[in-house]
Image 1 (cartoon, rainbow, N blue to C red):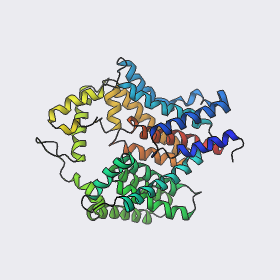
Image 2: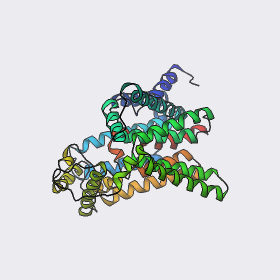
Image 3: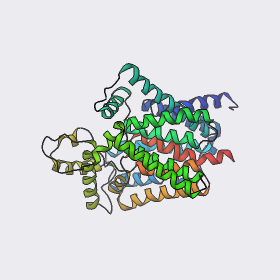
Image 4: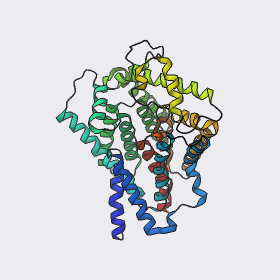
Length: 387
């Protein structure tokens, strides 16, 4: 329990920060700044992590090095500013006594956010069954101003936290997990669904002692996922795009999200091959990619700013092979330490995040930066709090 009025204020701000998925970015950023200020006010120099833990800043150093090394590209400042969130989380969560309260708040607020979305579509704007999945996604982005794939990732992770958190009663689990999974499926992010299914199955396997039951669990998971992909229109509509991928675009063709992503990955890979050693620098990737997009003759590639849609290729393209290796080493070390310290939630978050980074540049968006920094850093220091 909070011992002073400052800690009471801090606890309130923690619960506000835990709802970062739905709040405007400014609210979450201000909340994080206030929390950091309170930590510094209460702990002063003891709030800062020791130098030996600076390896948690390795991705930031890779991005910063690629920005400085290529002449401080003006467009790179946007990406550098995002990493201030990681730095603030690195300092704040080291001495914060409220790691578990943040995790609990994230789960509870995610549940109520999911209920709010479900209520909106039930009462305010019911959708027809025709193209339901895409209409659902488009309406979420229009009304709630959150990318549906990000919501799918957040709700899937919140569902796993509910399952893996022993302090949640069975009543919470029965109520929260089906609701969060349902809304995650409705939001329709393909990779969050795949990554979520994988960590749920692996977690289940780790809790089962009989090999026979392990095999049955895997078989059941594959069967359930396959049945949904084939027969459930809410899921099959999203996965049907994968049946006939094509990047031989014709003029005026209306591209699916999968065709757009394949075109982006094709250009990203071509650009990486041309600049594999040193990259092009933080802030210069957009120019390089758009030079390639012009070869498609498709206006969709210029309707908005399309990055590599793959976090690994983004590090490789912006900072070269050393930047990519730095990011990979960072993920591997975090996962290895989590496994060694039996920090199960951190281990599964690393696996979940590593998978969803295959199809999105999460660290190039405020949502992704907050999701990664709050849980990578927060869960890394959570064991320290319990000692």
